[in-house]
Image (tube, rainbow, N blue to C red):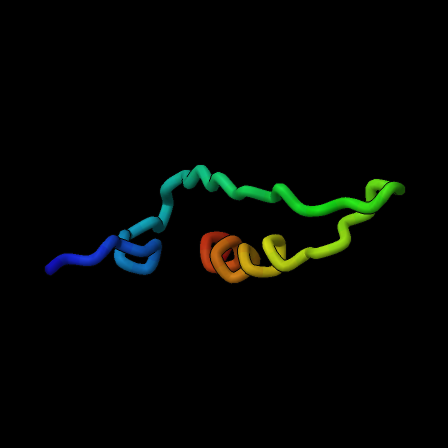
Length: 51
């Protein structure tokens, strides 16, 4: 059975990549992010694409 391809399975050199990320994070009453887990989890993907 074939799995889903990851960004490491595709040749992306010299190509433009559009990334959609759900940053629907909880905020406190002062609009400060109270849980940045989703942001932190997306960093490896973004760093991979930048490099």
